[in-house]
Image (cartoon, rainbow, N blue to C red; front, top):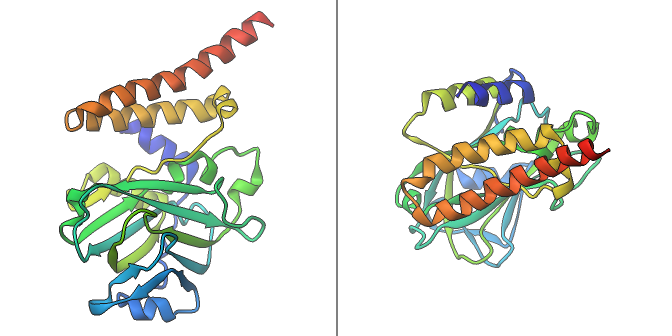
Amino acid sequence: MILRSLFLFVACALSSTALALNEQNTALLNAAHADMKDLQVIGDDFIANTGSDGFLIFRDVEMSRDQACGIELDIEFKSAMPRPGIFEIFWRSAEQGFSEQRKAFVIINQSHTQARQRFMIPLCKLYHYSGNLNQPERQSIINALRFDYPTNKEIALRFHSIRLIDAETMNGQLQQSEPEIVILEPYERVSARSFASFDVALPKLYFAYEEGLQRISQDKPFLVVWLVMIAGLIVPMLRSVLRKERL
């Protein structure tokens, strides 16, 4: 827990702001900073996808990455999903648009879709979101976020609230381990070469180890995947050290 707090503190600072969203989806969709594609509002303010590429874009965010350290979602599913679903979060700045290099994906378990649920996504754990201080473009102001529905599911969601939270608020929630909040682990694709740098490999190794310990007792098949993932993180580090010794 101390290491987690340290990583979050270093990555982010201390300010709290919320997306100016109303609890009614109609107000959200009519707001100047929100767009949607392949989505439609149905009964009881649920937003359903009408195609395989449905997403919401929240524009005019204009927040620093320390202010937008995490996303807190209060979501209700019209019908529970029969299987886990993969949701994607994209971000962009004035200099860089939405792309595969600027996204994360989270997995929502079907058991968390049976009733209204609060989720939290710690974006600032991601290397491409707030890592690598030598690349200032990864520290620029966030001016828009995009929330993508799963491509292979027909679902309808009601967003009771969506807000961005700062590092201090998010870190407090993580330490308190509030049972009513489900932490969605964000995943990203990082090039193998990047793992030769310890500022990338060490946080990823720690977070992978932490996530694995939490899931081993609940998901036995995950144990094999977890061990392979840990090995995949350690091997590039060892190869980098051995390469330097040869030189």
